[in-house]
Amino acid sequence: MPRVLTSKAKLESLRKEAKRWLKVLRAGDTRAIERLKAAYPKAPPTPGLRDIQHALALDYGQSGWTALKAALAKPPSESDADRIDTILRHGWTGDTAAAQRILARHPSLARDSLFTAATCGLVDEVERQLARDPDAATHIGGTRQWTALAYVAYGRLDPDHGVAIARQLLAAGADPNFNFSDGWDNPFSLICGAIGFGEQGKAPHPQAAELVDLLVEAGAAPYDKQALYNISVSGNDIDWYQRLWNLCEQRGETDAWRAADGGFLGKNMLNYLLGNAVGQNNVARAQWLLDHGADANTTHAYTKESLHKLAQLSGFRELTALLEAHGVAPMRLTGLEALIAAAQRHDEPAVRALLAEDPGLIRDPHPLLAAAAHDNAEAVALLLGCGADPRGVDHEGISALHRAVQAGAADIADLLIAAGAEVDLRERKWKGTPLTWALVLGQPALARRLAPLSRDVRGLAGLADLERLDAVLTAEPALANQRLDVEDRVTPLFCLPEDEEAAAAVAEMLLRHGADPALRNPQGKTAAEVARQRGLDDAADLIEAEKG
Image (cartoon, rainbow, N blue to C red; front, top):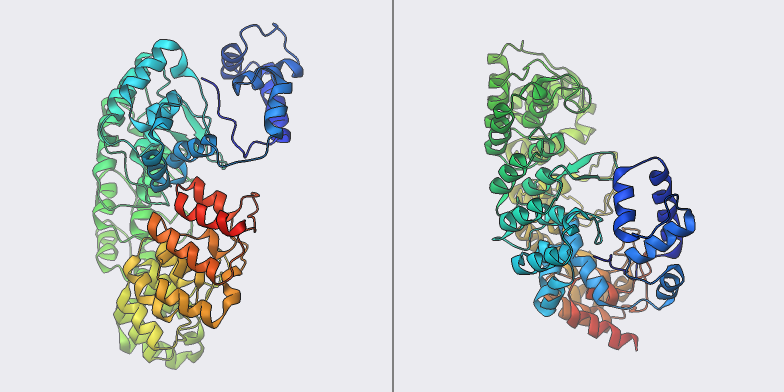
């Protein structure tokens, strides 16, 4: 099945891809050899660069390298190729809403290829594609260069047919151990895709348990470090730990969880996961890990501090007691650490005694940030009452209000704002205000609470608060073209909400206040092109009409 040539494709990138393909081919890479056979069956036994370029062109559905260059010379447009790119990319970027909007308007795109059919859950089209090309299940392609089975495992568009399609693909030769790198040398497997979670909190596949069982039955390794990591950084239950443990136990592979080199950052996996559980105040997971052999005396993989100290600094009393019950000797903290721990446990006499001894401790922002991050309103009130600065920030410019938003702590946000916290402070790492943090982190109620106090036009646009947006832009029209170095969303016109009707209304208002529709992001896209790729066609039409 030919790969899709999108408007993002560049000739220089394809030249480099051909050279990389030739290099691994000459090194004897099996996958590279099979790819060449599939794309260019008549390739010479010892191909040169021109042969690989010809094969690459065929792989893109072109007659040859010259035809490929001619296709690239065409001006970019909001083509079906871009829409297909969004559909297939959703499984990695998480932009499921955009993919769903596109499919609702252009349902025929689901039948474009085996990859789209698999991720969209079209059992009949998968069957037809495999009948036409019996080896298609072994091919890689689409925007992510995955197998069709990977698009199933990572996809979230189809709630009902993933297992059935996975069976078809496995029967046709799909590799249950296919994996790819995230760019940081972390192997992401099909099991990892089905389970989800991770830093973005991705929901598991609707048929995740059945998919994982099927993949293991087909030969996938049940001990999956990246999957265990992803589980450990979001969610609360122990079900997935137990399921993967059981699958390992059935194969006699539970020792991998305890192996010194089997986890992350020099930890065995049980100890690594225990550090994450303690950091999240997840008592149930900590108990499960301790019951399965984790060492309560281990240190946290990232901070290198003892877990007992971490529990104290976080105010996690139950976890502190649990670790002590498993043999950890109580640790006495001093100085700033003692202040943080005392505030977290609401020990006002201890807090005031420490500040009497060293009044400068209250000027450090970390106690207040820690209290806000752990949704500890009593600790926040105590520290503010002792003189903590609500406008203080850490080394990345992140404030206690940012952390309160991250924790979903509306009462703490109110406390901090009443004390003088800066509502529109933009931290340095991601350039986000508390309002944009609320939107990105899925805290709409907090976003609505902050909006009446905010002048952040990006956040107000994303929230679709038209009344407040209009008031802010009327007072300061220049904000309609405020530019920030933040990935591809350089001005507010690139920050439209997910809802189609709301996106059109926000675009119309921004344009009315002077937003420039001709500006392009670092990828060379206009706001209209970005909106159309997200399936926001009405907003795109408005922007293009203004552009003239």
